[in-house]
Image (cartoon, rainbow, N blue to C red; front, side, top):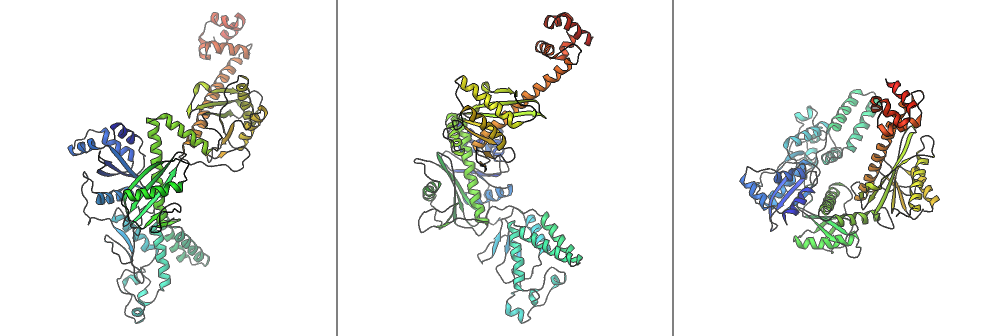
Length: 595
């Protein structure tokens, strides 16, 4: 890619945790790195002067940057480790396979033990992780030990050997750390109930354990068993204080392809993650242009076949957000909960990030194309009959009914058209009545546009909920414009969009371009209205000071302020100059008052 394209890629990177990958002109992987903030980290390579010759050589070779977004910095560290081992980039320090991260294991045995290990073997045991440090695992295992008594011995606790009395309880039993399943002092069902609770805690699901301890604490307190109640209270507090660590992927997920899609009116964006032995080993996102308004399902099916061929995938199972038809030999899984759903969500997040970066890049390289796409997206999101090339937004401003004003801001092709902004003094409404004020300004605005035969907007945005929207619609009804101009209201609390006559609002994606433009309109109208209101209050306050002078009325005060701009200037002005504006008699009164 040309260097200018590389600059655009850097400029549009997300400011989130993730892993970045540098490629040369032949698409060979040069380097893999982790970052807490992708944009900041990658930018540093191209803005600093490098003392290392090796880094300087690498930077000169970079022509393309790819990245994978993850939830946390720890996830980025783990993913970097995996990609370096599997892809072996030229400029990375090679990682030896025996330098692996630790896992928590629930051993596949009767009365399972729970401990940490660096070696994974296929014996049916459950592995959770990997973790970025042994310290993190030890803190978690210490918490588990405090909450649920488990055995630590490596005895074969088969039913026959226990019944034969082969074992005796050890010191751990006397210390209260084990209930003694070796002497049949704890039922297997009770022990496995604890194991299930531990399994959920390791996954980060604390809800069931918290509920269990709360119930136990309440029961013992009700029975006046305060020592037992305090014991459960302590466990509950320990559990609530612990923050679960985020992991990249569960270890049991292996040799699986993950696909997800997000789309707009013209393109589909499909992300592909390759999972092997509990780790992401590849990520790739493609863009597909729609030809005949294809559905997400059709685009995803097409992309799956293309990506599997491109990367020679032999996976027998794929995870997708909805059912697809890709051949009987491939198992299609649509996860609803748990680790599998989490990895599909991660894939979808990467697809959405890719789409947003394309938007940002297009905005820089081809602004007209970007505008066309945003307008088409707004038309679809807001169910409009035409693209909203001309949008107007209204906002009221008053403080307890004083100096009520309103503002109208205008956007054309998604950008502010400041020469078309308009201010309104509220003329027909007494007191703080936002609804009546909105009706007045909307009526005045579009009556004038009709009289002057000026073009009407395709969309009106009202800053407010159903009440303000209804008032604006009344004005359009009176003018005969109802149905000729689309109109919506945006409520501040949850950013919900209201339509006339609809009780239930719609909620746009918080990251969508449509919502961003509506929010920008609302904020600009609020800023413009507040500024006008503040200026009006200031002038009113100054005028009222002059009107306190006996013999000076509102008309005289306005004339003086219009000419001299401020009371401070009037105080310093000679009587003769005052007389030129308001006459000798009034000038004498004002001059004598201040001197």
